[in-house]
Length: 432
Image (tube, rainbow, N blue to C red; front, top):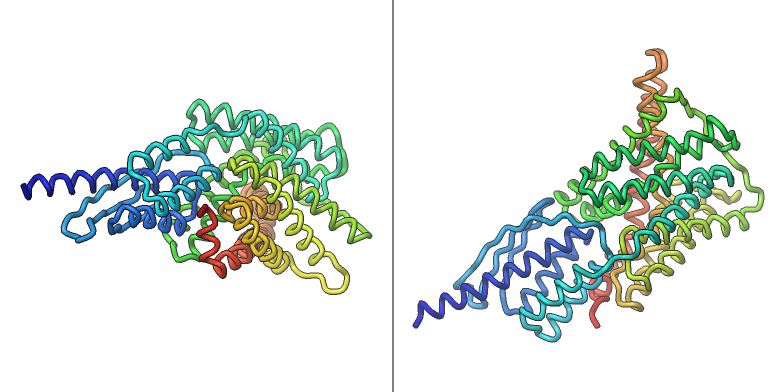
């Protein structure tokens, strides 16, 4: 009789472990932070009456489940599946953890809900394509591109993102996809130098491929490191860096092919800072909606993304350009990120959605894409130009590269400070 009982306990532990491994690995794949994965999975294990030990690695996770008396255990190693970013799945799986905890859902019901959530249809790819193209055109405007540049960037993004969708659907390696898409988009962006001469040719080329910048992995990586999940954070940052290198390779192909040397950058002076700040915020709102929809957030979060991006980018622009006490971009980005994070928490509580589902996309228009582009350009020039220019471009490369890192780190840290201050509220907003 005792052997049969032990077998039953072992079977129950195995079934629960397999489910929790699938649940946690899905959260990891769709872009949830490591802290949220741990909290949600531990909560679900406790709802079943089990003790859990969870080790999350970049490509795998290990779960050890023990019964309430800790006489039996089961360990399982699960590989993280290859899934696209999906904030809607993040939200609904977080809700599922609270449903399981509050309602003591049976395991069969939890499996059914998990499968239904994962197989839910994403937004129409044509809608995503259009919004991303509008977003990158707005991004071009944020860097002072004129209407000609915005039109060129719209077309470059439309063609490049459509290519990305089709190549990804056919299972091509994502590094090769990013390289090809960057090359195709910059080939269209360079037409401003070759044919149109619209006046902001450098902005046309520099922003034509910025829709590819992996903003969410960069933000998640910084957040994981700040939250002491250093290994996972470094892994996400390394993956994002590889994608940026692929973007650089695509850009290099275009620059070398046409012999373009965009060493000067357009600088536009706007005399009325209030009007300029409002315009900047509105274009940032459009960019946030387009960049957000790539990650498939809940629709109710899209308008909040636009509002937060408008406020955050407007705050940053005003702080950098006011005559009384202009701030540097790192400090202004940190303050703007803090404003976004501070607003994100009450909105998250209002609509019962994780704050990062709209806080992170709201940060994307502030991603220092042009600094990254300048650093890439300087790196290309180090290789292409004669030795007497090497020292100059090495200095420029480290200057622009350092600014990219500092602005990115500052805005993310500023955003997550309110989330950490209101930690309990931030990680329980999906509780019905």
